[in-house]
Image 1 (tube, helix red, strand yellow):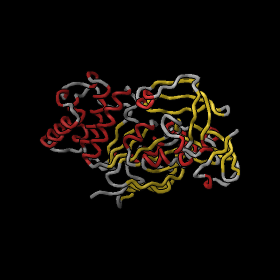
Image 2 (cartoon, rainbow, N blue to C red; image 1 turned 60 degrees about the vertical axis):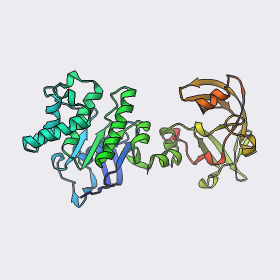
Image 3 (tube, helix red, strand yellow; image 1 turned 90 degrees about the horizontal axis):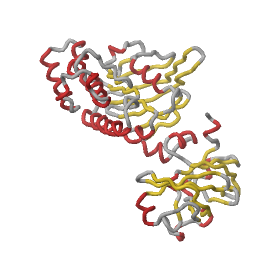
Image 4 (cartoon, rainbow, N blue to C red; image 1 turned 180 degrees about the horizontal axis):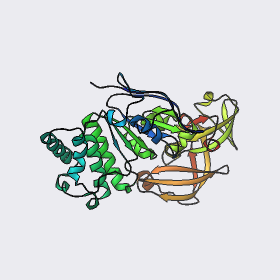
Length: 362
């Protein structure tokens, strides 16, 4: 029977350092959750509390009707995959995968059957007699995943499992992990500082900072509706600038912008954020008659950077550097050169409005 994992008012202190600060979260059965945040934000400590390798200073953790506050890791029936893989160097792939099953005293025939299933699932059948030192980093990580999944854990926890791998292997293994999670219907909690991993894999993302949950939502919600300027900067990229509210518009330098979310902040001083891909180029990505005239600005292209599928154009607006992302196909139709005059359009509903700026929070 599927069960919820429930964290209620979890805090963890190491002396005067508060690593996790009053965290409450319910993880639904079969859900893929990513804990996302910068180094030192408390995400790994929270994961270790869930596994039982750390005990919280206060608060409660339960799985279904069972309280786990004082339950040791071996009794929680949770699987864990570490960043370091933690494979036994003197054991073959087959023996590594079988290790947890042997510890549970399963009959050998069932162990052999389960290991064969894992080898096939992970594409490791031909490597079953090899030792970890004979495998690539990606293959070692697959073995670690197979070993964790073999015991059929109630919840699978992964602590930055792909961070030691190169970029292309990370992308491939992301797809493997996501497909496994969907096929097996397993509850999965994944710790990462890589926002691209979180956005591409999670059902919900938990953004953490200073031991606290700053926002919990779907990848779309986190990216498109960041609640704080820190999230707007940490998840993806944003252009920030400071303005002041006057006559229901935002004054920035010589410009007076219309902003859809202007009423969300009461103070006169307002910080605006806008994603690079949301800034339009009049005459290239949008027609002038589709624009609010007050939100068109005149700039010059200072730097053109080709990034494959995207071309970034850096400009200077009222003394602040800003970046615009253009799809490579659009750029190819109408190329831009350095020092070209551009008319940029800032759609009123593309702005995120804040009363603080993330740099002041760091």
